[in-house]
Length: 304
Image (cartoon, rainbow, N blue to C red; front, side):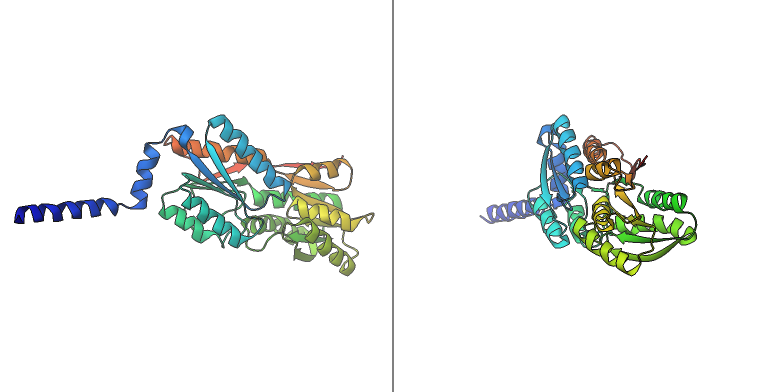
């Protein structure tokens, strides 16, 4: 009887040990046993109100279909708190990989670290995260793009021209990097009389630009850190002789350039960014090494 009791206790301890297996180990086993067709990728987009990010989503969907993998999307609606909740929900749904386009680079760091703890590889798009382990960051060279915008203004208006800058969402890596690139040129060659955040939003771009023009009617150009703000600025400028340069190369911006309204846009390739994110996931699935930073080429689209 005593031997039977000891055997029962031993078995209970063994079963308890099995049940205490770490999520990391469990996740590793689940992935190694999965077929490609069973892979589920969670995708958190900062906002689908911006055509640029819709193009990223389209690129993800198209490549995921080619690869035969499943994708679950969440739209953060430019709300960092919602994005954190969205990512947590995707983790709870046991996605195998995460693709994240951050609304705020700092605010979602905690969610990225939770994904790390669950051994879910994370790929970030367009904007970096402040903390947490990321398998690959896929984006245009935002610093270079900001420099391209500044240099175009210098070429058009010469040294010390008075200009304004529309900044993106405070805390977003794209805001910091595009601003850094622009000021690499502007601080040496231009007179930046005003810089204000319009939060990457078209309506904000319109309202902020109206205020800037009222305070500084003699500015020659405006550099906007994305096309949505730039298109709002174009509305505010109207028939005034002020050139607006945007950043992204979305469809509305390209049409505006062709119609001689928006002067130029530093054009990214959002569909390619989305496509590359899925290809990166598949490289990880196949056990291949991936680039920590994958820079997608830029080009300047401007009026003839």
